[in-house]
Length: 148
Image 1 (spheres, rainbow, N blue to C red):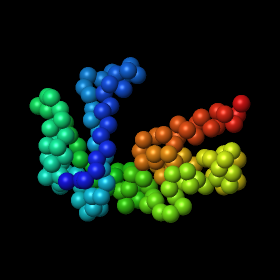
Image 2 (image 1 turned 135 degrees about the horizontal axis):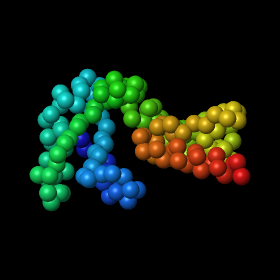
Image 3 (image 1 turned 90 degrees about the vertical axis):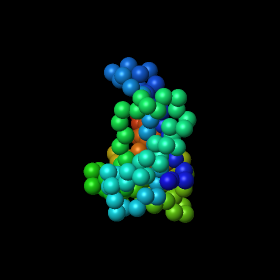
Image 4 (image 1 turned 45 degrees about the vertical axis):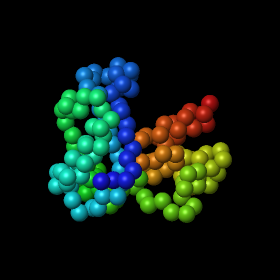
């Protein structure tokens, strides 16, 4: 059982954005599964997570589908290196706002070295990284600001 899980309740937000959605969705992310097994081979892990999560839900019997995606699944499906959703292992000088390739991070944080038209906002970038999309959004805001 993973020690730390990030839990995202996505149904309400999708409904607010006028998406055609009849169900709520709960996405659970955690790290530290090995690269040697696919999700379908780890039903015990999936069951443990559901049991823990369903303790907090009033109507767990309404769950219609689950899917455990492991690093092996991510590597095979999306070509993530070692199945790492952050794409890189973070080390010293790569934490938080140090995670830039810009030669001028104060004015062009998402710039890529000295290239004018290349920007770095992938899963390993700041903030949040992972698969949340926050760096891409923030990079777009930087581009809009710089173009005005």
